[in-house]
Length: 188
Image 1 (cartoon, one colour):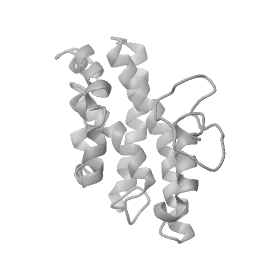
Image 2 (cartoon, rainbow, N blue to C red; image 1 turned 180 degrees about the vertical axis):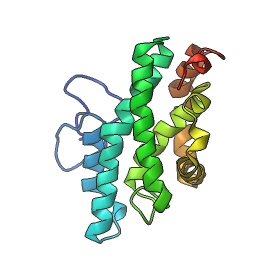
Image 3 (cartoon, rainbow, N blue to C red; image 1 turned 90 degrees about the horizontal axis):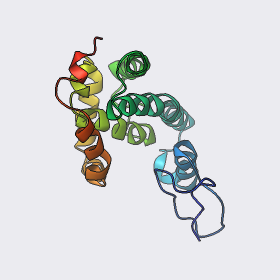
Image 4 (tube, helix red, strand yellow; image 1 turned 45 degrees about the vertical axis):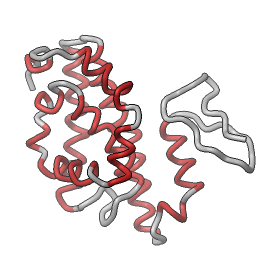
């Protein structure tokens, strides 16, 4: 059967099928690690340097970009302006600056080719792109390496299909809570 996705009930991300044994897979990072291990032959090109970079940057996305973007988007969605949003924005900008520096010297997060790290990061950048006013509020156009990487990655055939899955449910809620002018009033 399939692994149980979470001991606390349904969580985002879903579970990956495993037909040989029954075990739990829960939380975004655990699901990503499970998929990396299960499909390592397809995910990694073989050398340890590539595998280490891919996994390291995927973990960076799960432990930094994911919670920072989620916190920022939560504040926007729930109209939490002021110190809470300012704090979330500062944390997210530091994380995006780290990605910008990495992409200054590399085409992809792992260095030389598209990897699980890029796959984990793109939906968060896409959520910021699709949420009213976030792109401008965060001054993302100034992060030229990040913007170029995002533009390149999101046009990959499988990625563009994946980003459309659930887009109305996922991004529609953010759009409906964020009105023109609200986020723009927040100072950087």
